[in-house]
Every structure is written in structure tokens, then in C-alpha cells.
Length: 283
Image 1: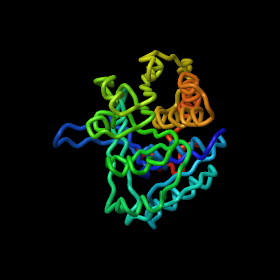
Image 2 (image 1 turned 90 degrees about the vertical axis):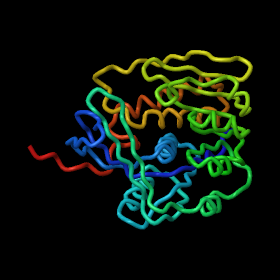
Image 3 (image 1 turned 120 degrees about the vertical axis):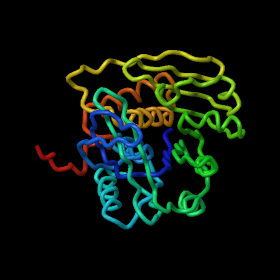
């Protein structure tokens, strides 16, 4: 039986800029701001869950500013229940997309709330699936402590293994884990599953007692591919919802791929496309 899925992590107002190439140190590169829209892995994942009628709760941050109102309106638009943690200013993320290259993201948060303030909003008590996207180790671990399935980003595996933190599920991408994931680290965290995606090639899933297996995804026709931003967050949403409903991990990956395909067909990482569209560039 499905339970509440709790998603925790920072949120941002994404500023997407297309550039001819990434700047070298000291270089000035002229780009074009394409859009401003809600973003951040936690908010994107929760929003995609909400559009799929999941019982989802998001705990994230916002300021009392125009950017915070933009995030609020977007969440209300998809029916996403949010417990907001107040901060001085809503965080922004600069997303640079060079021609033919992978996106590069810079995030910034002016005077974020204290960990204690965030944990007070999250509260205690047993919950269903939890996805914690906080980068601060102790906060990330504490935020997911009461979940029946505790899930987080695969980039945290080595850190968790070294500290002895226990997790059930890791989700990440091959580009963000270029060295792969060590079986010993997964064993040290007590993980049940680990999913590493690799774009149109599908990816690999690790399951305790069974090791690694490849999984494939149906290729998206080139004329349907609009934007790759946020596809990983949408994939995570599908996986979490499937596991919450009792699916096995391979079927969960197929569910994740289906949600990611929806994201790939639209502009922006937040379901429904951009909330703000930047004015057209001057010739």
C-alpha cells in the first residue's frame, strides 16, 4: 500500500543561459538567458510526483521575495503540498548550457536557515519513502531518518560509507559518478538498491544479493527531444513512486524512464514548462 512520499532539499529559481562555450578563467562569454523557472532536485522530483497523483510532501526553503512567490505559485499550480522553511532570500541557480555540451550548474544561497529550523519543520515520526537532497551530511541523514525507504543522491555514497550512514536507495547518473560506484561502499551503507542512469543508453541497477544489471530505455525520437534539464529528477520521481507502491527495482526504473521521457519533451525541469520566460534577445 502506498504511503506518503516525503521529499526534502533546497529549491532554487533556475536561470537558464545558453552559451557558445564555458568560460576559461578570466574570460568573458556572452550568452542568452532563455528562461527563469522553478528548480532544484527536491522541488522538481516532488512536483513530478504531484502530477502523477502521488501522496507527496515537500519540505524546502524560500524567501519572502518575488522569487519565493514564483516558487509558491508553481507548486500550487501542480497541486504540490509544501512545508516552507523561511530563509532571507530565495536561492538561485545559474544553469549554463553550451552548444553540444553537458549543462553546468552554479547554485547560491544567501544566509540559508539553520539545520535546526529545517528539522523542526520536517518533524519526526515514521513516514513512507523519503528522498533527501540536502548536501550537508548530517542534515541529509537526519531528514531521512524516519523513512521506511531512505533514498538520496548517488554522489553521497563514499561519504556515507566512510561515516557509517545507512541508506536503502541511491539514484544518480554516470556523468555525476564518473568513477562508478564501489560495491564495498554500497555494502557499508547497507543499501538495498543503487541506480545509475546513462542517458539514452539506459543504465545499471545494483541490488543487494544480485549485483549489477543493465536496464534499457525506449529511445526518444530526435524530433521529440526538447530539453534534457531535469530528466534525472523526473526519473527519480518515477522510481520512488513505483517502490512506494511495491514494485521491484527493475520495474521501478522503467517507471522512472517513462516520467523522464515526459520531462525530455518539454522546456524546463519543472512539469508544465517554464513559469517565467525571458524576453527575446536583441539582435
